[in-house]
Image (cartoon, rainbow, N blue to C red; front, side, top):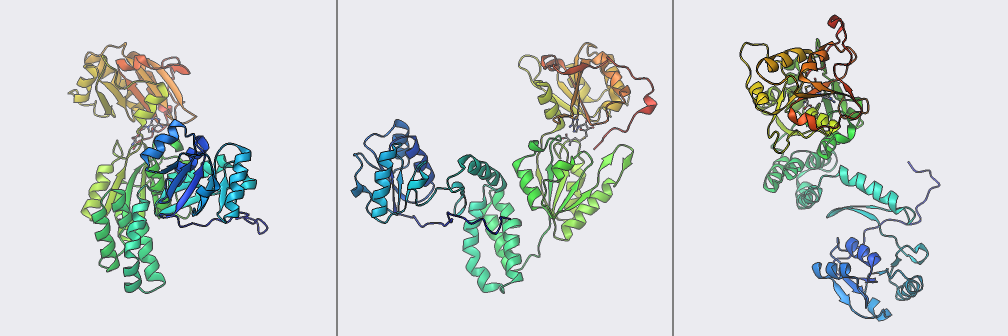
Length: 482
Ligand code: SAH
């Protein structure tokens, strides 16, 4: 909250400019910047300059703006609703500012606050919705920072949603009593099914669900978003994931999802850890399925947060089946899977022209049987293999692949806590891989990548895999599993 004494010296308003003349005097970069800003409105732009730089000339042509190719004259300002002095010349800008003021037209002079009647905001444009950010001319960098934050928070389809809302306003006023019922309708309209339909690019559907909502044919519906939280670093979360987190009533998350990511959710969202670590499943999969169904039935907006990508070793299939069976609406938001984060940490090309053109994502847990699983055959024919949850089966993976004919010299890269600053990297060969099982010092999630493409990785800050052989596998700590 601002202190009571802090008063705005420039008060934000939204000015009607549709079809009105806005004059920009100047032909260089400053004029171009203002033209771009004002070009987001339906004002009639007129550029006054006898010397227009090529970039601005292109912009004028592309945007059908007016251009008076002449020396500045105050007559060109007449009838305008706003004037911009953007000549880059202090004396000239002052003349323009004085003229505009004499004509009673509000004026802005670029970078000369003392000549300004108004400041231009940094703008987040979701027309007809707009967020204008002002700092009274003091901090354009700050304004841009705030702008980009807000821009990320707001769905690109918010403008269409606002247009749709306008077309429902009259109906809502007629059909719904003022107060709670109307407020509930709009809440659901802006964050529920109509908003989701527009985000999915289905305007017809959006209109239909909004009409149904208005006619009260549908009670508030729950919705579950199965969201990929990425490998751990907060800034590897997608913008869409972030938006869902901001709107969630409830966040249901796994053990591997870092607190910092969960904390990005709406502050008053309920947070339910259902985390699993090997050996101590705090909730069974059936219990989690039932929980999601029950939250959906209560009409909650739920984010089911899973590490990495929700569709990779995340048991999403079972959860989606349960939701389908219960006819609860859901969607999937992809995330950066651990294999990609690990490859990035090693600057390791997962596909490499002339070396490998296929990838295998596996757990290695299917190697116990007599017959070799298909992925092992792919590995032998050159695929890059990413092994999830592979620490406790490292020896099996290595010996089965070597027995089957993969060279013991095949390169291997291992990373614990990929994408996090706490990451540790190891490299070696397939022959070294069994030592991974004995490493009691690795307590975070571990990703193993095997294949010829691994040889092209960057092993800087990476330790040799087999350097330290720990005896006493009995002391092993539980491996993190999905
Ligand atoms: N859905 C997740 C995978 C869940 S399975 C995803 O797409 O990434 C859990 C396994 O993922 C862990 O045992 C480990 O092998 C791997 N893993 C997850 N996060 C990791 C990280 N930050 N670093 C290394 N491996 C990770």
